[in-house]
Image (cartoon, rainbow, N blue to C red; front, side, top):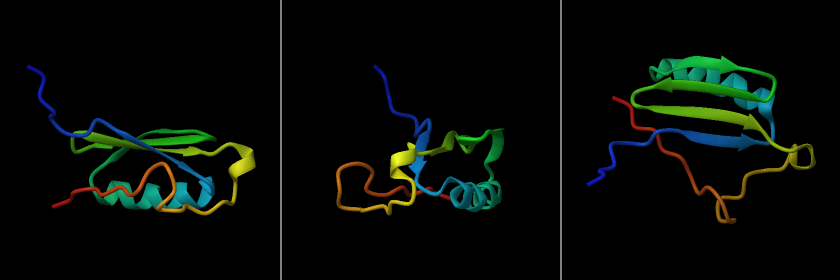
Length: 81
């Protein structure tokens, strides 16, 4: 039988990649995640039995705001001690 053991990873597509990269690259190490990849369109942190990736959106969506009640991700909650 397969049992869920946690969340492997989450990838967030963002409309302001530079601001999001700056925010998450400061927050995630504080929460114990280690940056393992940082490129022009994607940054990836791993730790605590999970990983979080931030990726640049397609050019036609740059600058658009997140709408919580639209189809797609509702929210993300990271557990920290």
